[in-house]
Length: 190
Ligand SMILES: [Zn+2]
Image 1 (tube, rainbow, N blue to C red):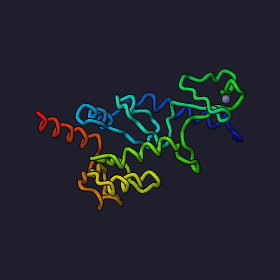
Image 2 (cartoon, protein in one colour; image 1 turned 90 degrees about the vertical axis):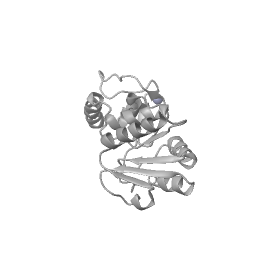
Image 3 (cartoon, rainbow, N blue to C red; image 1 turned 135 degrees about the vertical axis):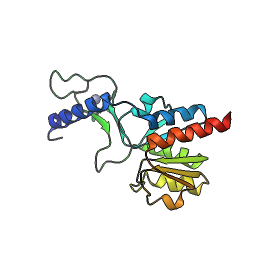
């Protein structure tokens, strides 16, 4: 609030970098799961929008999305490019517009978290990908899925605190392992 100009300079810089990034083989493999399973829900802590750009449809974003903004006064959302020609962008109501990302000390968006919880306890297979799974409340989703009877598959470059409750652990890069898993499922399906 003290320095929105600085916040926006930093976010515009980050947004530019993120926008130039492309979904990797891991994002694409997750999107491909939609054609292999009846229902796929993606729960992400990433704010980079790359799951959507990879083609995933059913996404809960626990930490928001850097390509989306909202007015802190009336909570109108702005998905399009903002106008910076007169300095920090303002809403029609006069309120400041900020990036729709969760900042340190802020709560996770309730609808996104509740949706994630619901999907977790209903899941048959729960993939934990590229996270140390130690930050709560997101890490609690793994435990909720496990308690509800899901088969837990972990894919991470190293073992984590939740490895012991996983039914399968694959150590390595998601961009290498996920496409392998898709290949095996495709082979078995044919
Ligand atoms: Zn407003």
